[in-house]
Image 1: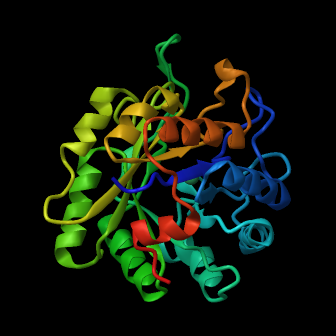
Image 2: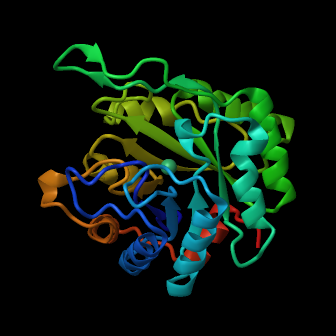
Length: 293
Ligand code: ZN
């Protein structure tokens, strides 16, 4: 079995109501990334945020975060395209990443491609009502083709996100067409709580994903749980050969004593070692996931 690649999903668009440890600004993210790296993370995933936590889509924010992170540690970098907070054209959505890729000092190792579209409204099961309506995470096939060409041309690795089996089938089609090259790195985005868009964060929800992995291609898969507790699944993921993408961006883990991102990562790394699986360094993760050098 490959060594375990742990990705720190440090902030997404999470607030600080349930945990004080979510980093917003470039230096906060970089400090957090270095601690996560020390604890066993090989990859940093981050979203640009303003001082009040609002999304920051400026190039400078991404540039400064990557430079500050690389001054402190060697974690592989996986920025966002802005999720539904940047519902723009394909060119506009990927513009920051391509500009970052022009300079080796800021070039990210990964560029994300969510391989389909889905409703991502928030549902309150207690009130039995949606608290948002009309939030569509839009990733048209034409947009994804544009991303695939642009990411390949800059020698970055696509980070392929599957919210349900339909996304995974589109990954298979892109691999068959040669628009994506193996090994493919696929993140199963499970969702819990207010978010119904993904498979639930349960063994059945994960099994449904892994049973439909495209045949005939080398796939490395990881799992996150947006709005849910991924620690309930990490033993299963580790023993079945998957990788782990976890952090306070997805879930506050308040019931575990409000851990920091690094404490969460250390918990997963310790669990992996106790189950007989070693944890990958960034250099090892690069080789496992086929990141171009
Ligand atoms: Zn994200």
